[in-house]
Image 1 (spheres, rainbow over the protein chains, first blue to last red):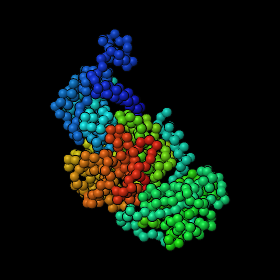
Image 2: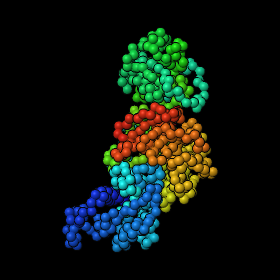
Image 3: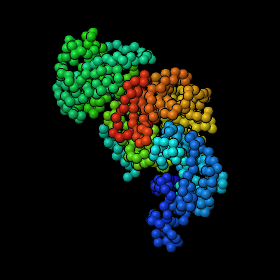
Image 4: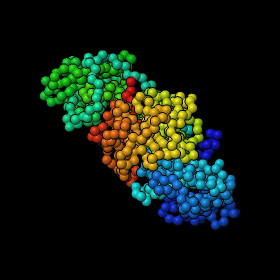
Length: 176
Length: 454
């Protein structure tokens, strides 16, 4: 059990690093095209098509769900999934249905304008809200894990309303 | 190298440097009677007392594992002087700029000379090196105006613990002259931070109350948060993401090993010790809902769920007698402060001011609860345990996470800078005065002040 946890943690760290990098790009511009995005996976895959993105991979997920499609945002202290969020999560669920051997980790985050422990709890609420909606539309609960990062992992760096709005989020990271 | 192997190496290093947390052996019996019971009074901070601290005399100078005793005599005086000055209550002179004193003067001061400085109080002392290499430090406090001795005390310490002898002297002087409880001879656990705002490295670290004897405990590969020293200073509770999820560990300082406080796979955070060190309070999120739990510190008990509201119930702090717990809950719609009995009964809200109230901490003197108030900015304040008498002590963009000095008169917290997100540790007196930064090697947050060492 412990070995699996450590392996998963390693995968999570890699995935998170990739997502963090893509997240930053998304804030500034549209996500890059597949060309040149070489993550060292199946470079010689004849089915790679225009790029080298492997179907069912996290990179494939990000491309399929589109810009900001891997995350839903929240109002201050809120953790509800509104109609806009539902649309985003539905696209995620479609992808997950396409690749039944993948799993997902939903990360819950809060902005810096909250105290440390409360924000960990709030991040947990947000991650669970997203997970609950995904399971309600058919994704098997055993495929989804949650983790809260509270205010520890901001995506936007400013101390302003715009940045805070970006940081109040639940981000879905897929794992193979 | 795994975290555990690295910690084992660290433990040997720590063991060598810190030794076990043994009580300082007090040697010379005090000559002055014990002071009156401290009462909750406001300092008259407009009136500081002047106090001179010349270098301690080293009769029969000798080398020790911490340097020559002559140098130690000066360093001990420097620490005493710094402690007293930092308290904001004293205007200190020396040891720099003061003439050397002789051994006979230690017990028989030249009062006329000190009166002419002028100075109101005088600290003199000596450092002796025993045959076993240990130090005997004696310090004497004199009232220069009356020309008599107020108190004397002595300590036997291993050379590498010379700072503790200095802090004990400063504590005795401070207590005797202000009527307050001591607090200098204590340690602080906190989180040392570095790196860019979206990729912070957060390491568990410890230091003396004045920032000396600083040690990193974790290496920063995994985020560490919200540490707490156990009351006997043998362990540190803290939150770590080492296995990818927020989990609470008890880190045994001497052994250099840590264990989970609960095997539950639900996320756990906000760990706290009970005042007797037998119980651990923590928060756990089940299916997205966070509640406060307690569990035996030994790790052999069953968790006891103390709250069950559908809101976020989190954090918490025991009253000094261990019978009540103050915690935060948003069950009313926003973060507020609640008090309950230690068994979870009689939960009642105590904060009704304008704004949200978070991170409540019960003073070791039982008379006040410190908190973070969020109303636009984040400010540190205090209120009585019934919620009355709210006072705000700081006024900055984001001050949060108050922790009490063991004497219940100084509050430490961390300040976040707008924009950069850089954090630093600060202190402020109960009166709101003497706000000052505690310098740390890199940024710092989540300070937790431990009790006075025995």
